[in-house]
Image (cartoon, rainbow over all chains, first blue to last red):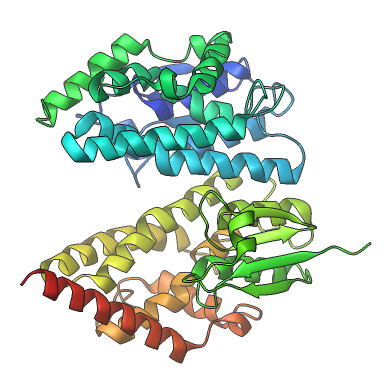
Amino acid sequence: MADEIILLDFLPSIFGMRVRVALAEKGLEYEYREQDLWNKSPLLHEMNPVHKKIPVLIHNGKPICESTIIVQYIDDVWKDKSPLLPADPYERAHARFWADCIDKKLYDLGKKITLTKGEEQDTSKREFLEFLKLLEGELGDKPFFGGENFGFVDVSLVAFSSRFYAYESFGNFSIEAECPKLIAWTKRCMERESVSSSLLDPQKVHDFVAGMRKRYGVE
Amino acid sequence: MGEEVKLFRTWSSSFALRIVWALKIKGIEYETVFEDLSNKSPLLLQYNPVHKKVPILVHNGKPIAESFVILEYIDETWKQAPLLLEDPYERAKARFWAKFGDDKVLTSVWNVFIKQGKEQEEALVAATENLKFLEEEMKGKKFFGGERIGYVDLALGFLANLISIFEEIIGLKIVDEEKFPSLYSWMQDFAEAPIIRDNWPPRDKMIVKFQALLDATIASSSSSSK
């Protein structure tokens, strides 16, 4: 009996993109269902009653929520193909630490860059770049955060690159000027079919963020 | 060659307690290094340069930070008395509830404690909503892990102690036995379980600490509104 995999998602969502990348890395067939986040479906309410958020992976009828948890689930279930987490417990802890770090910092800082102005935006830009430089340090000379192989931390981070153009545009700064190694890493990731087919085009993301700015009255 | 396990922690941290419990449940020998967060040791800064926080587990010289990351490391390294089940779906559920505990429950319970007036009322509404989800998840079970204490119990365990301390200080009920019978009964069972019971930080010191935090917060908010 084949697996039935459904993904409740939203195209511009960074968190959704992580799951798309993980599913693609494992070569999995699934049904993608775009959600209207301003008019949430009964299925979304039923599958994620606690948060009512996407992404939600529904595997043979059972829901899994929270992107980092979903990616680990995918890696646990389909462990024979393209492992995302390494085998060694210390290496795994290291990867989980950095994925957690990215979760705690990057989204909120990015959001502030696009939705605030003046001093608050300047502070957010500075902290954002500082954090990206920290990540560059962690990457070092490795091709990927996972080492020779594209791994868990790469999956956690790469989706943010679809939003870089929006951050630069609304924040009026250049990420490549400050973090060239990280931009080189994003280009390397985009050479992978799993990434290029899963990330939304940066112009489309930009237009989505422009819409959000209007909605929140930032313009 | 022996294993060398060290735990850097503060005496009162709920996050550190998770690690203490996990190590003791698995029967792992370890050394405690208490940190004063107003005067962080060079070792702390070396072992956790990104966050500069505790707890940090150091195993044979290698540091691991962030309590949930540490718990999974402990479970993967020492296989006796497993905290997480083998099944990937059960693991995903456990991770979900642990994250919910920190992101939502702890935040809302903390706000009930630290805020005043209307903000406190709103915090209580949010906390009640969040606790309802835990109540639902708890139904029919002795522990979140089933018959045995598991990962989610260790993740949420701080509630069993901290909530009663907050309730005592502010004179407000957060987990009412009638509204949350399963959760209330879990809090008693968990707090009294062997190993858990023996490792709570001293209650009188906790009351003094949190009362002082509350007093300082009230003082600074009233002085800033002048």
